[in-house]
Length: 204
Image 1 (tube, helix red, strand yellow):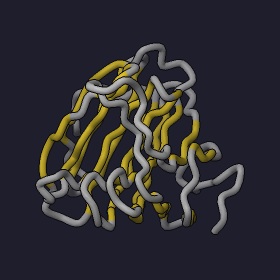
Image 2 (tube, rainbow, N blue to C red):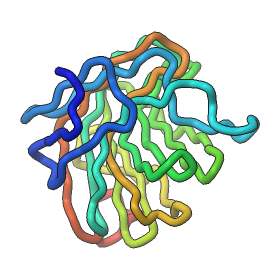
Image 3 (cartoon, rainbow, N blue to C red):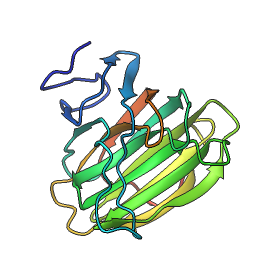
């Protein structure tokens, strides 16, 4: 399916837009699949001089109104180191964060998070034995939380943080292949809820 200016996913309240373009993608009742192209990533190395020279990865995002929670089951056809599928928060090149299902150099897929405030940090959290993982982002005011789950029911807190000036931030889905020739990422069991969560730190 060719990219269009606007994409609708039934489980989400607003149309989505592309930031970066995948080679192949499909969206429908069953979820979303997208392909990352060769050597694309969203990362600003704190040891470097600025944004990396890789292509921007495909991101399909929308701007929610107020507080929310968004989750999805993520599966990745891993081929190369740092291939990943992610749920992403994105305002611009200097203000973003992502929660990834990623293949690290060890080769064992992990939950990884990155928060970018002009430069990026990078944190590996826990290994995943299955071929998929549920990831969730929740917002409460100016604060955000990342959660991960192996069964889609019991969630563990991965990260609790704030972003500089989060006004106008969008949320959605990302695919990346920083060192490889591309990978396919599938998002299903997509769930969205508007409104403030009782406790952002609580996985539930």
